Length: 318
Ligand SMILES: Cc1ncc(COP(=O)(O)O)c(C=O)c1O
Image 1 (tube, protein in one colour):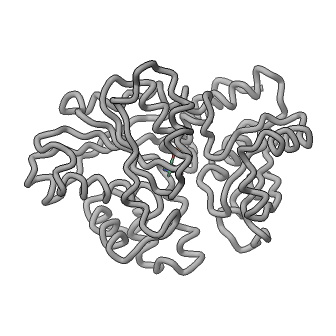
Image 2 (cartoon, helix red, strand yellow):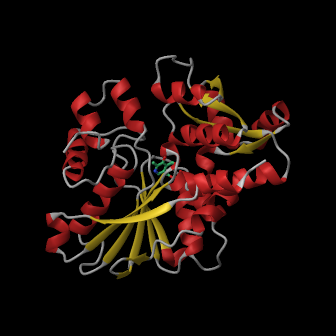
């Protein structure tokens, strides 16, 4: 049973924060970040919105829990595990990995929340959108609701569409921006707003525009949104020292971002301003989609130092 106190726990509090940067100042651009925080640290940003209607469907249809997919350091898996644990629901995840590493902090958290983890090698994982594969998974877990990777479904986008990202503390935004991976967040924002929306892709995935389009339920929405794919770098999860330095500079003004999603997209947004691809004198609204738990995985793989981990996650004492 989903109790109102459970929904309360994943009902977000909205918080706006302004970003300072010399490039923004030069172009007279205001950049507001919208944060969403909940009672569960792993369920911040877009996670609470994308999971809301999936969890309601679990309860209304009498499912025992959720079965889903994600990478070995997935923010989505952490969020599903935390929600299901809190709500007394079962959770099962198919993880893109050859072997379940017992020292991986993301998977350890999921396990600790009671999530059952099943390793799926990369070639099998690639089939995750194929109907035959989905039918097979559904048949193996008849008591669980299948939630697609990243929670990107019509239900996930519906939750996102309820968030007002346009009304910044300084007035209406001219453009809303977000990091884009599986596309449900971008589609939800487009469905919920009349303003222009820009998804900054953090993955190299040629099928992304079509998948976003399939989740958009408005007619003639095309002129209103686009995806910029020029900031993926070497691909999902890859980042260079410049991006890390950018994340550090943001942390210095208490804007905490990581280089996989929010940092990559925010750095891209500022680059677009610099290149005049975003008109000067605009007011921008950037959705902070969460994901700071991913820093633990970067630290675990020695991709960032302990000092950067503390700095970027905001755990350094002032
Ligand atoms: C922190 C973070 N930001 C952005 C995204 C991208 O959202 P979407 O997959 O809906 O495009 C994700 C993935 O869900 C994420 O974990």
